[in-house]
Amino acid sequence: MYNKIPVLVLLFGIIGCDLGERAPGSMEPLSATFRLTDASSREATSFRSGEEFDVIFVLTNTTGGEVTFHKADYGPLAHFTILQGDSVVATSIDGYAFPMVATTGRLEPGQSLQEYWRAPNTPARDPRIVLTPGLYQARASFVSFDKVEVKKVPPIAFSIIR
Image (tube, rainbow, N blue to C red; front, side):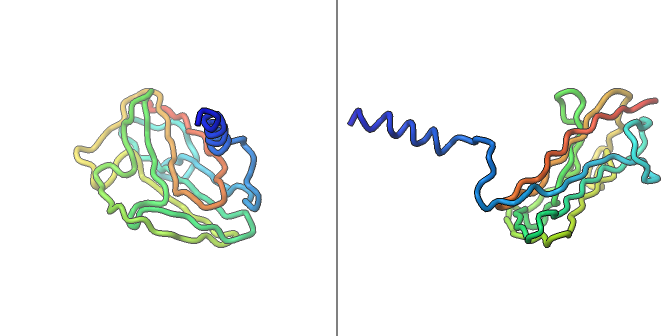
């Protein structure tokens, strides 16, 4: 009995390891872009207090093959979070509720998925928020895919001025 314990520990350790290698048969990562723009669609990282701005995430299938993704039935393909330090200030889903029914979608080669948010409020957010002057960070979270990873999109640092 005691001889089996080290073997089981070793087996679980090997199964649970992520060696950073791509699995056989997996595809290249999908292309992703994440950006902030002002109301006139110019890329920006500085906005005035009270000004609305756009948060945009685009995911493109550059693998050459069809890929499958999973998401909540009525939820967005991506959602965005605005942080100040470690505190969440606003999200693109504030005030909304989505049924937790998972659906499967497909993304053909060359096809893109785009998610957009006019920040920092949603139509369902009450009370409305006004970002005060300071430093902030925008982050994107997106749907998961089978057998393919998405190129990482770093958070975007931005500032609110008077």
